[in-house]
Image 1 (cartoon, rainbow, N blue to C red):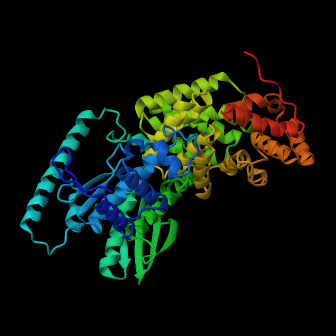
Image 2: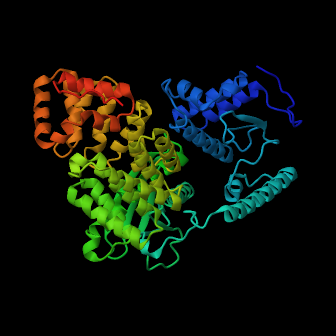
Image 3: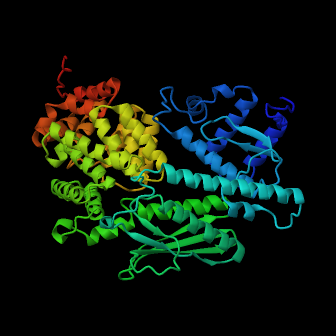
Amino acid sequence: MRSAKINAFNIVEPTADEICRQVERILGSEEFHAPKRGRNFLEFVVNETLAGRSDFLKAFTIANVVFGREASFDPQNDPVVRIEAGRIRKALERYYLVAGRTDEVVITVPKGRYVPHFAYARDAAPTTTAQEEFQAAEPAHRDNSLVKTWRLVQLAILGLGIALAAALTFAMSSPRDPLIEPSPVAASEPKVIVEFFAENGAADTGSNIARGMRDDVIGQLARSNEIVVVADPLRSDASADFMLQGNVQLDGNRLRAAARLVRQSDGVVIWANNFDADLGAENKLEIQGNIARQIVNSIAQPYGAIFQSDANVIADPAQRGDESAYACTLVYYSYRQNMTARSHATARECLQKATRHFPDNAVTWALLSVVYLDEIRFRYKLGTPSSAPSLKLATAAVDRAVSLAPHNRRVLQAMMMVNFYMGDIDKALKAGTAAYSADPDDVEVAGEYGFRLALSGKWQSGCELLSIALNRGVGAEGYYEVGMALCAFMKGNVEEAEQWSRKSDLESNPMHRLVLLSILGTAGKVNEAKQEEDWLDMHAPSLMVNIREEVSLRLQRPEDQERFLDGLRAAGVVVSAPSVR
């Protein structure tokens, strides 16, 4: 323990005892809504700093000690520590706005570092980032002249900061910055009006939750580049495609939120759901955030209600004469769900025409690059020949997308995929980390990033993300299941691996049959393995003579490749020797 001291700025710092008591106060408050591992993160960084070991607070150390990551953890490619640190910063900020307004000791985790900062409240910088939140958090009865003066100073600083940030954003934004560039009319993104959420129950509590939930929904919807959000329902907008309506009901501690999405053209409710929560067991802010996230995931993800509704209307853009960027995006996601040779050809043709008509649409270029890439990675499923031109086309398309919108998560996702199959794993995972960090709730990004992490040998973190994507029920049937099969296989759980493998799309994807064959060989089920080998010899003979090449294209570590090939050998499959260069 240490006593109070004066730092280099002539400011008295809190004692270790005061800091420890403050941590206990924070962790014991229902207004500090952080998961268990986030709480463990906060305790660990505080204790290490008080013990004089702040120099060792690196992402690798925290990942291993707090999150149980393996020794092979790579902080450049696995953002788990950065993401958790961001959540803790937000949780601390909210705590001091709500429950910790009068606390004497302020604990923060400055951006870009994991070493916490301790200060007395009178010396701490303002924790809020919005004037409304600060005013709402300030008790109405306080009438201290010093406090008033300090608040005016805070607001002046805040206003100056906002003005400077706005000026810098304007000055530094490029003409093609995806955050400020107006969407082209031809893209035809769906427009959604978010109505004020109705409320039933106690006026004060219900109103706060209903308003907060709507604000969270708007904030999360606004992160999507494929949707235009209208936050003011009082403004008449005849061009809006959908209206999102909500209702919050309270009965004691029981909360039920209802939401529905209405198509404006005919008034049809295309999606509706109820969400229940217990205010006595969960934090109010956490409840409204979780429900808002579920609503947004249900309606605005690539396979959500909005896109499904539009995809049913635009069944075949080529026949309808509609080859806009948005229409071809719908065709792409329709292709991703069934993945037939015909749907692939339709998506390829539509996206090619869209890029010619609207060459500055980055997402269209990104999706086209993945369609080209699929001609290599799914060639036995789609019946496409293996060809170097496909990879060159994919590379050229994604390079064009990156030049237009380098920070767009769809572009980053495509960049990850193409670079992975080009063999540039570091570049691929850096792009995947950036895409996932931009929006961890984007299930498609999380799933593809998890798949790349796993196949690169980062099985623990990759399989966690694969499991999340699978539980959300998005993507092509059987796609994430084969990923989970590989996860179990590499962990030595052969029985679980077989169960997952049999849930994958075995009938249409020979590569997934090959996975099952290796698992059966490892399990010693020679007769069943023989049946799978016979099927592959009949339906994918070219795969059986290129096994090593196809496996090395996907599994990046030599030890993982050999483990997989050993399973095939145990099943009686002849695997060619590695080529000598």
